[in-house]
Length: 354
Ligand code: SF4
Image (cartoon, rainbow, N blue to C red; front, side, top):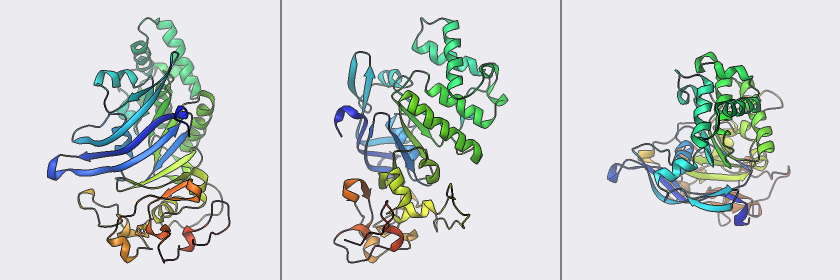
């Protein structure tokens, strides 16, 4: 990938909660890149580090969260050209200038993000006026209506208070506000989790169309892999603060290689096909203060071997470099056979263990 197509470059990123001996490592050694206009899905259960990761990247972490290492470079686009912006070295003022206009974030609960005492129109007006103080009220009103139209809401919603809208409408308002200043990168943290399944699907479908139309890159966080496959180009699965698998979305969905990814898929019904019993993942996510030795997933993994209890697997490259997986089952030097459930190729046939 040439660097000019990249919008975001994250290298060896670490986040901890707390300081000194009491510090708990919440994100460990995460590296990835995102191309312009692409969608990266980030999946994992609660406590996997996926939200902490994006709050850290955007410098929205609250104490006692601390970034303890890494590099985060955002490639800013402007009429004068492109330039790299160091998210971790930038001053708070520079970060504020970049937020909304170059990178925006949609939180999980729109009800918490919107001021309950303010009409929706006032919220839009403030975002637009901060960015362009010379704009007139009429211009901002017109732009607000245009933005609502993008998310299929009628202009009269500007006159409503947040509690007068449904959950789906409020999340659409947040999405429209995130797009207000045409950022290159939008981050959405479980934006549809609190909504019913039909509204979730509608919003994901609208996001798909908006991304095609407006060309922004998107990081979409959820624990529902079946939702991600409709939207994402690539999916990154996290467990205990680390990436455990990353692959093109459809390849990962058709042929998961990490036992945790397989377990996540068994936690949600497929979009199509026959009804089936969901088995989920046994046990609970680990306590980050006291992570298991070796592979952090080993107490819950049906395929755990002796080695898994003592040695931590690094990310290994599979599928001609298209996929990364942190699991000893895929170590070329391992004598253990890859279980059938984890050796389907993304294209339908089964792969022999190499
Ligand atoms: Fe399971 Fe071992 Fe792979 Fe971890 S390394 S996911 S415990 S098989």
